[in-house]
View (spheres, rainbow, N blue to C red):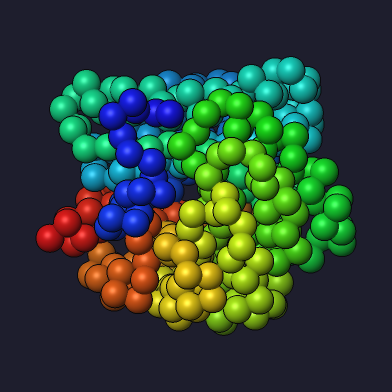
Length: 307
């Protein structure tokens, strides 16, 4: 565990609301790092690991209780494209957890006295493709094939002893089924969060059916949505709470739109810290932000929730 004095994250969610961090990529970019290649923020695990720790630390100091590791786009297949063998890829995956754990130690050394946790990010298959398909799903792979893709890195991340696995930005209920197979029996708690649009998964499935997959999985301590527009959140929270009976996790993006061809965000932000009170009232217990939501916004969320 990250801290011998911290309760489990599941216990913290049962007791109240927990603040999640914001976007890793925008924090790294704001510090001057180029994330334009296919590995995205995972490239810095090999090239500038200290920058990843600094990004986590910025969120802890802003008021986040949980930091998500820089492993969203870190896969054996993606690293292989860069000439990185499986042994080194496994080391980098484990390092993503270690860097966040180091940020916990530094935050406590700087006087952050509250419990802090580390969530190991497990991004969707489409993130490895780096073509925007994580926002579409329907990759043409079976559940068995998706499980074979995810299981090796799940095993490495579990062995690194994070507090929780973040099965995040999942666009498709089939992929969720594969991920849930991978975490059963792991001994590591997890949350499952879909990316959604129009009140459905990005692949078009009803949220009732998508959330129901996690209802009976003991390892899953929270279910919800991330990297969606803020106006999608409240309906999703109500559905997840009703269908699963579990705490709900929500961390939408800024409301801007991702242009996969241009690899840039367009439009205007619609994210506001004032929205989180409504999300909490609807059942959300783990609340933060995703892409384009930075430390200032997380500080606003923390202030709103703790007030």
